[in-house]
View 1 (cartoon, each protein chain N blue to C red):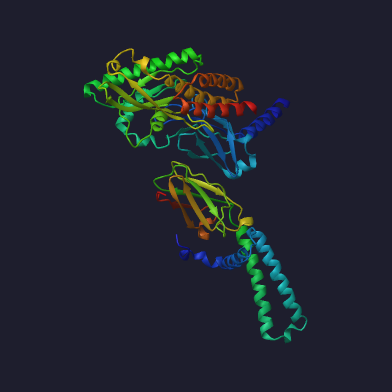
View 2: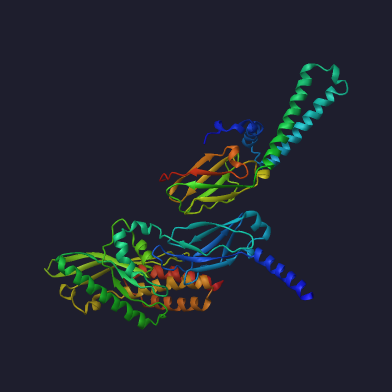
Length: 335
Length: 181
């Protein structure tokens, strides 16, 4: 009899706990299904409460009873969830909560700002093959717009550019000892960047570390010598608090006989490697902020300072961006 | 969405008179929540009524018609203020509804009081369905007069809220045609 009474009391106590603890969970992805990490989740009734961000698989979960009193939950009958992440449009979701039941897992899709909708659907089909999975943040190269070449040559020149840029960047990363936590590689995209869509929109869709593109052409000097003058844009894709997503412009001059050479990398600026270190710095800084990871912040500070020390003439813009990031990291370390 | 079609418009009369008084007070720098103003006015009217009654008391049967009508009028104003407070206290503390429009990204709904100041919390619209719940305190702030819909990519839109749409269990759809700023 005692057991029976205990069972009844325990069961009703458990039921009480269950009714007061609706567990809300779900997954946040991009429109193409790629899981999105570090998405801020806010829960709103009368007041707004912030819960842990989505993990690397895009999963989030919270217990509403730890945020609001049972009376508030019962009275409201619904929660409004707000999902936000820099570079994406926020999404609101009204979730009905019934007493004693956890709602079904929620599926949320976040659209990049500027709208991945702005990317033509035919291009999306091509880009979907290149979308980086969790833990991988590659660099992408849009074909350069070059003049002074035959149409058939352009593909070869862009391929050669990709190979050599990758070589310059990876060699620099190995030499600088920046952590291999980010598997850096470079891919040439088989689409041309539309004029009215910015690099960030593509980069966010592709989950990239950085996007590179440029334009240039064969120039003839007064002495009759020819060279390929190229102006490139390096757009960092991850955005972080106070530092945003830096964008750098770089110039390279290449002798015409080296354009198709596998040794083209010798003529490419060292700033390519430094810019990639900056991009890794922004990406890691954002993750370290979310995880309150001071050890990583210290490491970021060290490798950024090393890059700044080695920077030379022509790197002023890059140094200025490094300074902003170093300042932000130091501020966090001082807290 | 015109208020003239609302059959409960007559109930708004005491509130509309109060609004006018509040406007005048605001012009001289007195801006207080609706409840405080209503209580202030109520006390003021009671005092006036007390003074008027003292003039008439105890021989009110032989009093002249004008002072008698005056006292009666003041009493009616006091009843009107009480009625206004009671009717707003009976309103639900939230407005549930739905926003309909092509652009529902980051849409926020705010309830504005008689001074066109936002008094609500919550109000984030569901990006897919447009459903929202905005909370406020009708007792403290008075009834919500205007609904403002805003989003980063569209011009904000304000619409008057007829009393009937604030009633319990009412869920109205509010149009939000996106005009680019």
